[in-house]
Image (cartoon, rainbow, N blue to C red):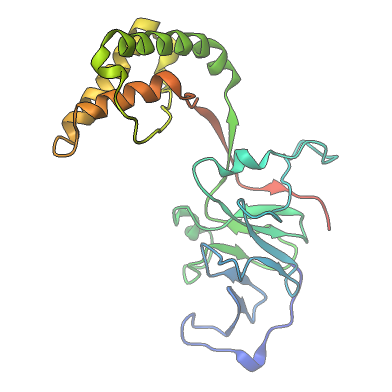
Length: 250
């Protein structure tokens, strides 16, 4: 963050036992410290805060700045935004004084021990031009090409086998399909044969029906067999965690 003029006209004391003032989702302190007091900034609060030179954003926002790895000094290979949205939206604070992004909220409070215990925030700046402290890592879910290369052919064979099961049992083939949810391939399929993958599919379906007996019917098995046989299977990703990522200077 850049150095700011403390808002003396708006200062309070009680909550933090020191002089502080609020500006939108930020709390600034007379000592020059700054914290973000919102783990999920609303759309109205997301944008550039000129006073601090900090940009609040979310990975689902169209104006979310491109993020780069530390080794990409020339900003040539931005991280695909889809890799940042796997598993849900991430909220970020982009510090244009340091040209870095950190994640706000979404983490444990273990890092609170590193600073004064009174600051229970989602992001903290000790002073100007110092690295901000986010409470969790930015998740980058990169495709696992090795897994796909090994397991992909086996999954396609297993899908063909399950499709054959549906065709052989005439009572299954003509059922109506009400919901279509892709299957997610577990990581242990890398060491399993096609026969074992098909057995896993049947086992998962049987467990799901047993777990939801009050609502499950024969149609549930039919639907899940259809989903595996005819929908694209989701492959696991390599989730890499970063304390911060880089952005291009403004």
